[in-house]
Length: 263
Image 1 (cartoon, rainbow, N blue to C red):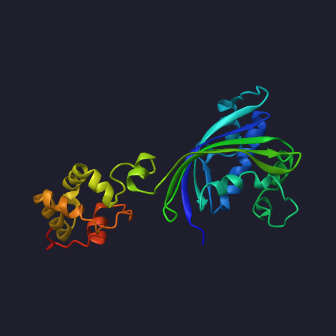
Image 2 (cartoon, one colour):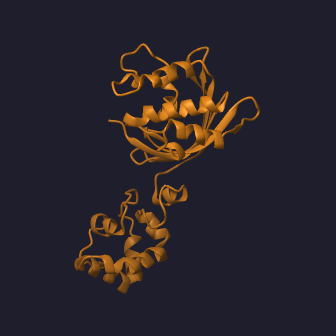
Image 3 (cartoon, rainbow, N blue to C red):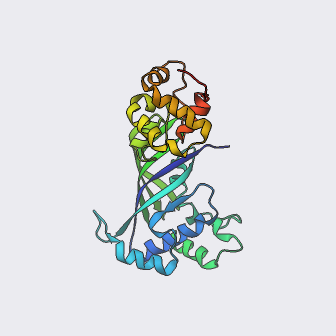
């Protein structure tokens, strides 16, 4: 089974006029209803067709360098198959293969209007310019990249116009916070505790009253001798690659501390 990446960013979609933009966005929402690897366009995710038309009319603008085209910029979040690049590669996929019985717009519960809309849109040129921040823990990557794709109506295919990698780095707590997947205090690893030890101690002080009695004792022992615990956490035998989403997980599961542990 493929690993799931987590991504967010912006996409700027360009078409000949606002009506085509609105139709395409409506199609995208319909195609996403059963998507396993989702691409959620934040501003329009809960809108119906008429509301999308109103939103596009209000927020689209003349495109550069071609003022005869119109663009709209949207935020997105998504789940990729290994990486979000797979989602981008599928973005215009429902504008083709209309003869296939398993086309996503041929499901029994889909209004035939959407298939007709897709067939009409397949004759139009559409472009999507992506700015993506993507991550996946199993493959140990965080990346920031740009991709520009277009739907070529003459060839009836999606074409990648450009792809630029801005950043490629390791999947660590520090980087997940730096690139805004999580806020500080929401994710931890051993190296992040080492590099932000004073902040870690402050978090323990603030959260101490919420712990169970046994765990509260562990925290009190750390707070009573922070210098010794700092020496303990800096020992080289700890696994620095494991990511944890709660301080208690690191102390109990990674470090295997108990209420009688000494440093």
